[in-house]
Length: 220
Ligand code: TMP
Figure 1 (tube, rainbow, N blue to C red):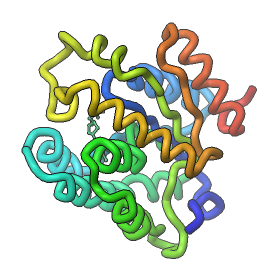
Figure 2: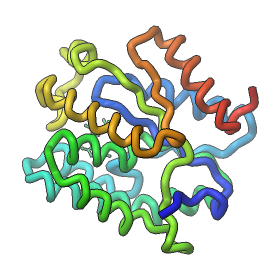
Figure 3: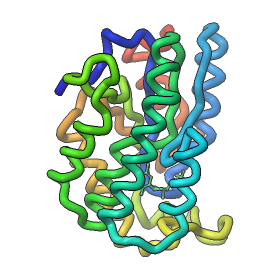
Figure 4: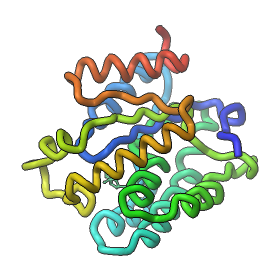
């Protein structure tokens, strides 16, 4: 299936990376840049973004469960999020900035927890079928992958707020998660921009802006 681009006039950007990679401040800053251009921005996240999906998020982040249950819950949350928030915002020509999307499922449930990649591909094709064009997938126009060595992320996370189920995983888990992101990038390199997150915040921001500009989403 092809990602939906022409059918939706908005701009859909997702932000990915292992826990501690430092996406948050850059998401807010990018929202400001788009607003300065007169664009309406929908800031959202996964799992979450709707009342139902936020309830599912609490379960996924806090309750023990097997990898398939986790995958089904995040995809259920995503289905609701796509239909209630993402597709309507794109149809209004807004910018949707989403803190994590489907690549996180492949990275965390697939590579991290060992759930079958092929089954995730099937779930992706079901859940992300566009409501108005079922043969096309709702997929970000650009995915910014904040790539940070797991050892550095672990240092950043140490002493931070009380860790959730994923944040408390050992470094080896995050090395597998990072390999999952690399696999997703290899499968769809034009959608991804790999941001080297082990730099000063100013240098990271520079790379983020550059990636967004090179797609033509912000003026040069
Ligand atoms: P965050 O919003 O603080 O980044 O936390 C979300 C957590 O949920 C993070 O550890 C990654 C995890 N996650 C999955 O395991 N699968 C998914 O599909 C998504 C979107 C997130």
